[in-house]
Image (cartoon, rainbow, N blue to C red):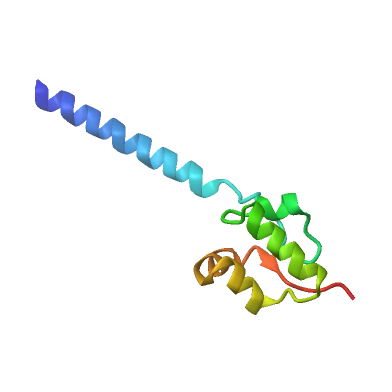
Length: 96
């Protein structure tokens, strides 16, 4: 009897796991529909990016105002790992 109960619980757990993983995969990523241009982004937009807090946002804005913001400087601010993690969400193009 214990075996049947344990087997039943195991089957339920597996079904729940697959149901949850299926729902997660089907949900669209709504965090960024298009790349966020760091030359146009507000401070609050910058802080919404995972890994960018108030200090990093301020530094990005400071470099942007001095027209010194580029990929190389951004890597210095964020670090290579964070930069590569968010590079698909951002762009660094100055307005003309």
